[in-house]
Image (cartoon, rainbow, N blue to C red):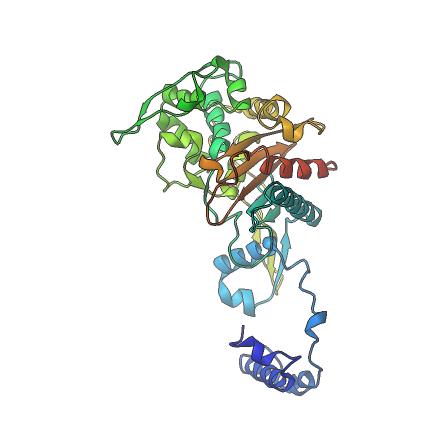
Length: 403
């Protein structure tokens, strides 16, 4: 980007624009990026009309920026900008458009409910194939810019999204979907001399309920009790193992309710591992990269190993439990008009309604939606994961009919 681009605007200052172009051509010649004999040929071309420049092509979105960053971090700036590569991505353009439209519609609906708001919140969307980690769609914000990507760079509290991974841990350690859980007040010493009483403002709770009911209705006290009964360290181990949180993140009992920050991409990976039977997938944007000589620099793995070969496969149980959330739980209102075959998911709302989440599946595909302001503030007293992120996910899943 040149300094003071306005002073070389080809419309207002054509002579300066010609001079700048000639300077760039000479530098390209000096750096062996252009045949020096062709400078006069390129100098003879008319200047472009800025009003006719199209920046809406396939290389101008969040996904392509993630690919660019991957190439830069893996192979360095020289190969990225001076080399020659053939890159094949996993992106599905139809899903990318579907996700962007659903996000736009959801945010527009939110703004209609809050006419006093002058600023849109940003949400992110990820669609991932849980079987192999292929990222089919990634939206990092309402409007594309090459700066802050909320899907991969934004760390937010996840609220009740964490409960699904707690349920996975419980199922792997002897619990069943119909195991009785006590949803009654509990008081926990946080290890720092403070007593934590989660959900204390929710009355006496629902009493004895099943694990499935606890997940469907997102019962805070019940899930903290699961952590207390199993040992919080066992739950933390599953959080780390499923990559919901990075290993360097310190977890406390409040993480049972998602009070610790992580990225939407980590949520997508954790949910993918939950429904694929515990296979050790990572996010894959690139299918294959070849250099100019045709040598393969990178290729997505064809064999995915389990995190732990001795681990109990609870994927069918967890998918059935997540189905109950959309069929008759907290996500019912958002999904009640949809054919729910092979669909499930979990809503999440962080403290003070700062973040709205949905993470779920359609068949083998995982869909994660997050909405929140970059400078954290409440989305509104009557907003939840089910009212903002849930309807966006519903529109995406509805549009995925052919998948």
